[in-house]
Amino acid sequence: MATAAPVGTTAAAAYASLKLHITPEKFYVEACDDGADDVLAIDRVSTEVTLTVKKDVPPSAVTRPIFGILGTIRLVAGTYLLVITKKKKVGEIFGHAIWKATDFDILSYKKTMLHLTDIQLQDNKVFLSMLNHVLTVDGFYFSTTYDLTHTLQRLANTSPEFQEMSLLERADPRFVWNGHLLREFIAQPEIHRFATPVMHGFITMHSCSINGKCFDWLLISRRSCFRAGVRYYVRGIDSEGHAANFVETEQIVHYKGSKASFVQTRGSIPFFWSQRPNLKYKPKPQISKSVNHMDGFQRHFDSQIISYGKQMIVNLVNQKGSEKPLEQTFSKMVNNMANGMVRYVAFDFHKECSRMRWDRLQILMDQLADQQDEFSYFLVDSEGKTVTQQEGTFRSNCMDCLDRTNVIQSLLARRSLQAQLQRLGVLHVGQRIEEQADFEKIYKNAWADNANACAKQYAGTGALKTDYTRTGKRTQWGLIMDGWNSLIRYYKNNFSDGFRQDAIDLFLGNYSVDEVEPASPLHDKKDWKFLALPIIMVVAFSMCIICLLMAGDTWTETLAYVLFWGSASFGTFAIILYNGKDFVDAPKLVQKEKMD
Image (cartoon, rainbow, N blue to C red):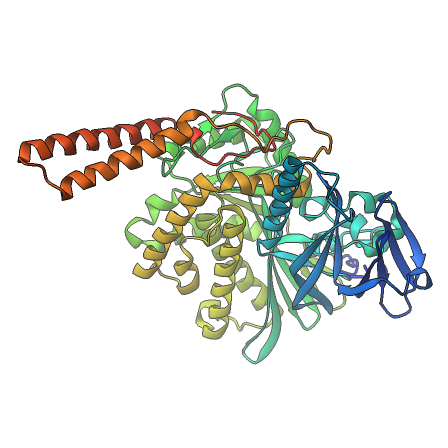
């Protein structure tokens, strides 16, 4: 048995307590931790960042507390500093405080906007609203003493040199959402302690008791910032093999010094396909015919094997209708890749569980049981010795990797937890988690909350099917709520997701603002039909209603008017639907691969 590296260290800690001093010439960020004398000085004119000491802060400076530096970004008006202004404690991991960032501020280096034209002012305002939009999406977490971006197993298998690195240096770049904002900090190791790596996703922690034995149970979902975006505008993979909506979910148990962890992943079907919104309720997925899928596919699974070991793909999409070609292509590509480390199982979730037959999920669980036992889980005993390693992960997906995926992940995690708690001696032989009513309620609600967080970040609404995750059965009220969330998703996906995608691309550095760019991509001229057709449709429909309410001299005259205006409104609606892609809110900043 190998001895695991310590899971946390304060040698690489970031400063936990900060004060921001503002003068017309500089921003001073003062470290207020015990014994600290460091002050970060940021020149508001040259943008130079240097290290100084407390006595250099002018007494005339305006002072306020802050809880972390997110980084800097260039917009039309110049450079801006992003800081965390409010935080809420989520709990502690092995004595390390974990925080949720709940409010932020964006501070301009420039003291005036007089150097901007009216158009530049308007563009700058739009870019600021994009940054604010990203920061208002719930789910930004950080710690100044613990590396949230790595699993327990990755942290345990590290070198002493890694342990001495700053949190910024050693963080997994996939899960640092402010990596682009901190790019200037990364180049200067002496200021790393002022930088706060922030992850996006979901964290919940609970102190639980079964059989009078107290243990901590944690759920952490880390959302990748590679190929990040919104539901219909970011599907499949990019040329580097990064999958859309990739989320690493880790379940942790801590009992009497022993630590157990079970990791799963989710991510879009990993080849080149798209599903652009076009006003239809469910746009037809398009598989690209002009690229070599195997290159990106191979890159994706090579990186997954390096990070997680063996891969068990659990594909939950429909095996008929518009989703069928995706399932067939996925299965074919796994066979063609012929990699013994990658296995594949397809389970038509909607068909198998139709008419509320959710008990049939046990068919899939039984199918995966041997594989799960082979993969095992990560376990470190109270003396720090590694007892077992997790040898592989389940990579689950549906179309969005949200609703169906979360249900299956919660069932796999429960099966792993059952084995862990029995091995640790919390559960007696023969006891089942499902019989522990208090813990079962905590468990189900946490996984439902995880589903909602992931869904809001990708699709813009809470998850579907959470009534099953919370209660273990499908309910009529759950179906009604699913219908409501589906309507909200339809509206957002068609009429606000372009802005949301642009906001994410700006925040993550996929688009950089050029201060001297002559033509802003924000000003794209709409075709005449974009304005004219909806107006014609509304007028024609209104006239149709008026003709029905205010009948003519004869019924034939009324019928003629109603048919004319009704045909005009229906015809216009048909034209709009046919040209649906011209009427949706499309991204303006980054031209995503066209695969239509």
